[in-house]
Image 1 (cartoon, rainbow, N blue to C red):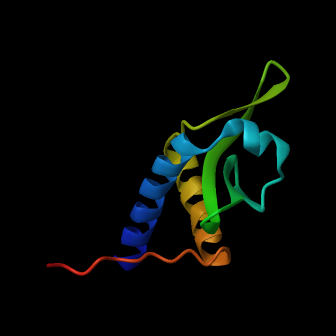
Image 2 (image 1 turned 90 degrees about the vertical axis):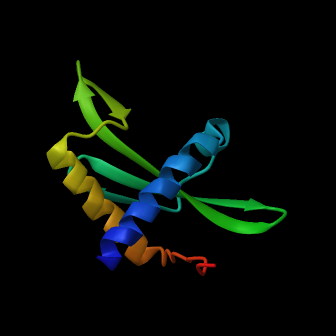
Image 3 (image 1 turned 180 degrees about the vertical axis):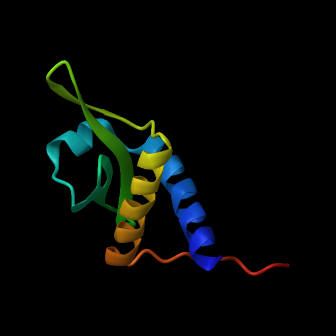
Length: 104
């Protein structure tokens, strides 16, 4: 149950951070790490700013269409399980910690 909660929180954070990520900046820098299971990928980006260093996690699926590689963030049921495995690897290897606020 704890792992499911952690994964759910992580996915929510991914959704929020993916919209705020500057795509022009990421095109120039290399990812810190990439975790791939099947066609599902989790790409880790390290960012530096005035407030320190932080990581953003990007999820995508790579596929080939008309001889060209493309990416999407849409997953079928099988690919969703692959994505979960890739996320689990990223959580374990990037030391992702979930902090909870105490109930009032």
